[in-house]
Length: 199
View (cartoon, rainbow, N blue to C red):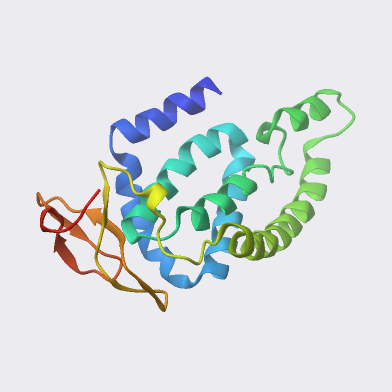
């Protein structure tokens, strides 16, 4: 656990998290269902070779950076990844319970792979569908980028009317740019937030 935390902190301190997040931002244009399946499958594979805690520590800050980069509801990215961190069925290294079972000597690697691949496929497909529908119904991830996710160092909540996902809003998130006093709306417009009502 400590190693995963240290790795995640290193990613954040070196700004590698933000850099990877910016590179992955293009993947968010594939539609939420496809994105959910992509994230679930990707994290499911990653968590097979690292512990689920380390996977979460590394992946979640990256996905949070992606959500801010494209001003997409963070839970649309974080929920699939968080749940998929527990889809560790194929290898003993993936999670301590697998290692305990493997340590008994009654099962070999082939046994894990045979059972695990089926479970991983089922978990990725069924998990993606459940997460997709639950995230929309329970957490409203199809809504605009929420105010609670707009942090002072990276985002401003501005009183600026517009349309987001076909819904008219009176205020919205505006991601800060490198230029001082400027921020970017979800539609790509650049604003001088100092002249608006900003948080």
